[in-house]
Image (cartoon, rainbow over all chains, first blue to last red; front, top):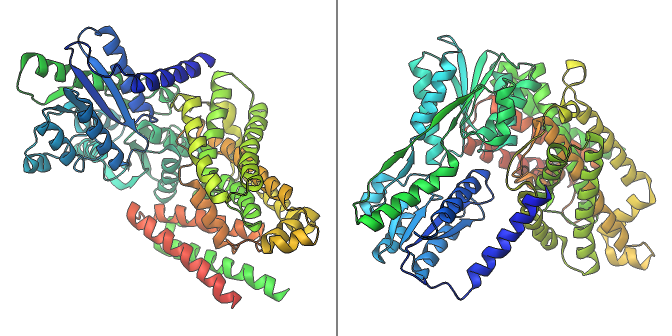
Length: 310
Length: 308
């Protein structure tokens, strides 16, 4: 355990030095790509950022990478500030996981006006607001709705038509959460299940645990809980166990985080979706490099989502 | 004596009204499953509310307890999942770690004469950062080795964690109302200058209260992990507000000098019942927040009216 901790400190220190160093100006004509993330304290974005750093290390001759994240996932002002700093630093492209699908658009529009290529990953920018603002920012990423639907279909095979199910969504304003909820609803409605309630677990394990316990108490006939991320699925699994209903209430999640693997192996969680978190930023960076190199017109690009079962 | 009883009556009335209302809105509310889900929510909050009551009686506050639940939980996760520590050792370690962090907050605040509000606000950031650093921002899966603590005894609704928290509440009340230390806390909170002049030690009891709160928060973190079988470095965000709400609903003064651990426990029951009830009636997330806020204000108002 000492080693990863040390590594983290070393990385943090190193990035401090790099950040403060005088060698900021590009020494060569390699393009500089900025990756602007949501919270790097979140496992999902951390994995994404590490995948990007690994990719850059393997392609060090082709581009330089600057990785930035915000402290708190809902701190929009901080992310707008990061975008502005990246423009001031003179990067050629910004690959961004926007903390909000609308509020970041003005800042990105200014960046584009300054000649910076914008690629949108993770959380899709709102199409209407984009066209209103006259900003082109291709979305490179997975279809969350299709992924959630695929997970829901695996679940539906284990249930019979008319069974009661409940959905735990994430933060209700997040586009990802809305898409996953819609995907779950698509699959459940198609299979003739009865969705008795949809409630928010705020993406958090502990909140989801309390909400799931309440749902189980209020709806004794619920046969499945569909959770919009794995942290909430872990919380729900604990609630099912506490209610003495392990095996009777099926659970599915989304993201395929490491902590969920034992639960899937034990059969306490049926399935989850893997959107290849470590490659999500890489896909965006590759798209940016391609546009910069070939002077191609940027276009939306869909990346794979796989269903993981035991 | 009558006056003291009337304080409990108000809290009991609020609680009963809520239970009846939820029961009316949803048949399933009166069930063992509901009782179990409420009883599961109580232990961690009751422990932190007990410690918070003591700190608030001395006129202090600690905003870092939510982050500390995250940090101590993270430490438990690393210790048990990566280092294969046993539960007993991890539990003691978590309480020591929490006690150390809490005492540090208390000592910096008391010895350097800074408001505990500010010092603990700083500690809120530090502890959360350490939670992420120590787990590398990853959820740790601990598994069955920790689950027994939060699981119902003999399959019935109440867990060991629940009974431990009740014992802690009783012990906290005895400490407050039947020991010299408790009298010192109240004297310090009521009027620190007067306490100092009359020879009451004012520094060490305050640091001790923060240390106790920290240790209880460490225990709460273990209970949290045991309920989930996992340690989440994001755990406990906003938990400080639930704890402070429970304490204030129980009638403890934010100004210090007055309060009761048992009444804070009633505050915990009210908050936990409200959470469970709102989920069961299917209230939307925004409505949950609006109603929770309104109930907190109403409960404090009821207490204030009674006092007049």
